[in-house]
Amino acid sequence: ETPEQYTRDLAILGKVFQDEARARELVDYYLNKVNSIQTTLKNVKEKPRVLLLYYNDKDGTVAFNVPPMSWIQTKMVKVAGGEPVWGSANPGKGWTVVTLEQIAAWDADQIYIISYQKNSSEIATALKSDPQWQALRAVKQGHLYGFPADLYSWDQSDSRWILGLLWLAAHLHPESFPQFDGIAEAQQFYQKLYGLDAQFFEAKIRPTFRGDLP
Image (tube, rainbow, N blue to C red; front, top):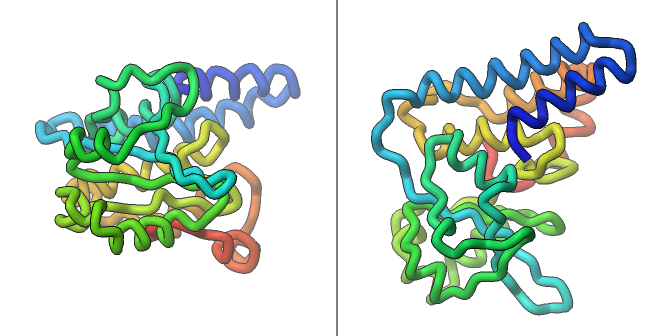
């Protein structure tokens, strides 16, 4: 659930599969990306107050959830230069349901919607049409976004978390990452980690993109 744990596990896998050079290459890829973000943001004093919500409508009942402080989603917000507003809720060991009243009370600068089953950008668009959500400052100021995904959401602690981190940092601090291109980063990611060329990426991966990209 942390960049440090992830790169540690890659190194262990390199030993298990007797390919430590490849593991080192991948570790360097992740470390370079994280270090680049941290270096770019080291002098940034303004940290947007961020609310990251997992949308779940299982059994027809809509629920919004926040992650524990120890999970990768919270870590990503911090590394990307944001302040997770849900820390005061003291979420437990899993996703914690929060009410709209609590969401309003947090009064976040920016809100990000995660969905593992649906297109998060479509959910965000629907929420923008909801009178209750329209009263939120983040929505009024145009800062309600669908977190990106392809085959899997970019917020999870699988290999794609680095894409989610890069995208989030660029959204929170666009003035610090004016050249960010989410599509180009994703293409580089699939080439670097999985050996998939640009043609395969365009044909098989890019059509699966969901959320607010680029």
